[in-house]
Each structure stands twice: as structure tokens, then as C-alpha cells.
Length: 304
Ligand code: GLN
Image (spheres, rainbow, N blue to C red):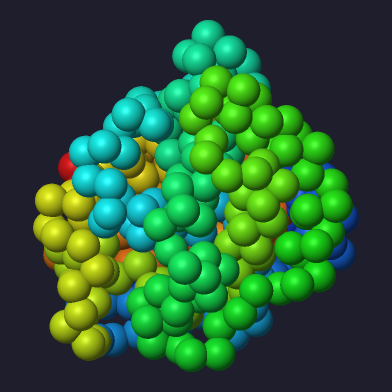
């Protein structure tokens, strides 16, 4: 079966698959999102795009942005990265404080909030205009120059960032944060509020299916070894305490966000993004994961 038929079939099968989860409400601006949105978009290395449902409406990509900031920072730090953050799955919620005390401020991996805050902190030190530079980076990956932050969501999260601010301060108390926690939270909440649609998201992850090179422009984002490592981190840590289950069901490197987006990569072939805002108890898109599981099952291809 071809990609087009497969995603149209999945779209039909799951069109009414709502009421299983809950839209994120700990960031007030996110609670206003209509839970019924549903879109699937596939971008292939051959330059084809296949979409079903709502792939034009933008939503905030939230934690999916952590892959972009990690790519921007690991470029500069290389293996020194592993002195400030670990690379093991955490087995705890994305915003948990528990391990940080025992592990003395070295977050378990770059995708839990504590780890992403450390990455954002170093990004602020490495780049001249961090918020602008993140936008430029993602605009190049997506080929879309008018991508922007959703200011309302960013400000709403900043205003309610009690937990993330606690994480940043806690990490700072162990000496693993260089900048002012308030500044780190500001940049972090902005990149989480990057507003993209499923089509743009699938397109911008294609470099990870292509050994680190943007297939449309030929631009190298990172070396093939870095691309392998980013994919490995997505596979082992991309869905927090649901990463094992995601690997078991979907069999691909993936990354989720509380805006309801999930993106996954088949190295050498394609990337796929699904948007459906109802979340399960781990903060991952309920229908998004279901759709991805069906995609690799019907296609008969995963990384395994
Ligand atoms: N901005 C969100 C937060 O920090 C991102 C979390 C997520 O998408 N899992 O809580």
C-alpha cells in the first residue's frame, strides 16, 4: 500500500477517536485548543508530501522544539554535552523534580524539562540572539520563512512556570545553569511556543531521516553520527516515561509535545507528523500515537 492510501485509511479509522484523553490545561492558553483537530502529514526524502485532515492549522510544538535546540547546542559542544546532561531514559514524568536531587543537577536526558532547560541555557550562552536564532534555524529546516512564536502561549506559560522555574533554580543550585533562570525560562517557553502545522513539522524533521542533511537545500545541519545520536535519543527518551511503550508500539524514533503533536522518523525514507491535542496521562497525544502505530503496522516498516 502507498503512503497516501495508508494515511487516508488511518485518518478515516481514527476520525472519531476522541474523548480518550484531555487537552493540556496546566498552561492556560493551551486549554483553549479545540480537542478535535486531527491531521497527519508525511514528508519523504523523494520530495513527496502526503497529508490527511488538518495539516494547515498551526499549533505550538512544545517539547518537540527540544530536538531543534539540542541540535543547535550539540553542534558546538560535541561530547562535552554529556558533562551537563545524561542520555538515559528517565522513567519519570517530563516535569519531574525527583531525580535531580539524587543526580546532583545533571538531568537524566535532554528531553525531560530539566535537561531541556540546561540545553536552552547553553544555547543562550552560545548564540547572539537566541530566540531569533532558533527561529532562523527552524525556518531553514521547514523551508518556511514566516514561522513564528505564539506569543500568547509563550506568555501564558511564562506566567505559570512555577514548576519549570523550580527545576531551573534547582539545577542552578548545583552549578549546572550559567544564565539567570528567569531568562532561561523566557527563551525555553518561547521555543516551546513555536507555532507550526503538521506539514511544516514533518518537513523540518526530514534532516534526521537523511543523515543530517536538509534534502531540499542540501544544507548540512549536523554530521551523520549526530543524526544517528539524535534519533537514538528520540527513540529512548523522546516520549518520557512512555518511550519504551512507544518503541514497542511504533518502532521509530519519535518526539512528542503537550500541544498534541508527535513526530517520528524512518531513517533513509521519511518523517511523519501527527497532531491531535487530546493527551494521555503521560502528556503524549493519545490519537497521535495510535495513528503512528497503525502507520508502521500497515506499512510493515519500522527501524526494527
Ligand atoms: N512547555 C512545556 C512544559 O515545559 C513542554 C512540555 C511538553 O511538551 N511535554 O511544560
